[in-house]
Length: 362
Ligand code: ADP
Ligand code: DP6
Image (cartoon, rainbow, N blue to C red; front, side, top):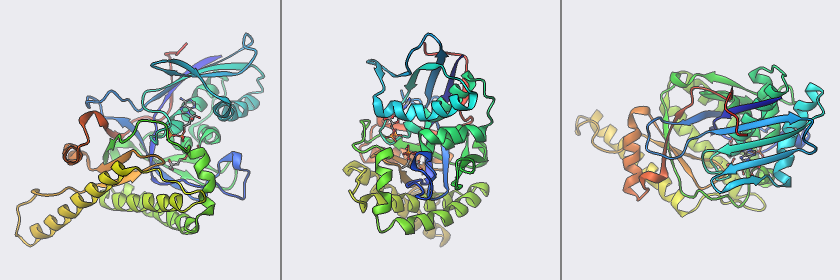
């Protein structure tokens, strides 16, 4: 009864930030639908970071308690009580479904910074649900797996799938699940993550999300997100980068407006996040000015600016969204403001979602 799985994190284009108050909060039923891109590092890109979590779990009579460890370069670190509680939420539900009473040992490894706003909780709980259900021989489909992953972390429901994904908010455990809306190669988009700070954020998403309802802007964010989710879904299917980029950027700002005006207020950005935001907005402005001049026949094509957009999750690190063919121009744009190559992670939509693998961590 041992299994291992891999999963990738995802970047939300339409954000989840708030749990429904009509359902028990442990179910992580969101207040609005969300849409994301499951992300993987572009192969051969010059980065030591891989956007992957690998997890191994074993159920056995030889264990007399549940234990979990995060494998790091400095050695294995035992998950603390709060972290174990989240892990057990997923495993307990699966154990109950399998009618198995055995204790487990799990070891997990994130090949990218943990708790830094890059969605380690998303890949972690997607990988955990996938290997634990396999070890328990439950034979679950992706929709069912996304429901169990959600219990660990809302955004993890989306990392069960590759490519582009919608999490239908639903109104119960059975109706709140994620589904793939489009495969990785059906929509032309890439991104560079500017790593502003690899450290652990001060307020985890799990805690910060509880304050969303205290912001006066929250009802507007929820209503707009519902509308934007429909628009973005359509635009992804029509391969319309401009619409996806501009709506995603706005939705990110709505979420951060809620964060900054909640009680207590949450400021996930730092000055360098804002520096990148300004650079993206200015570079895009140049592109559109240039675009107008080209239309009037005044300038040669492609001389200035770049069509790019930004989005930021709960942390200082920022995703610059661009078309595939513009990824090196995006890198140059970041370089101009002093972001070094080692702090750039080039990403694309992942080919696969979470999956069982043969290699075990112990
Ligand atoms: P992030 O932006 O990285 O998702 P969060 O604060 O939302 O940051 O989530 C970090 C939390 O997710 C950790 O404190 C831990 O509880 C959990 N987590 C991260 N990685 C793993 C892992 N590999 N296995 C189990 N839990 C993990
Ligand atoms: C800003 O899914 O990490 O990344 O369900 O409490 O674990 P919990 O929260 P989590 O929150 C994700 C918030 C976000 C936006 C998003 O991914 O939709």
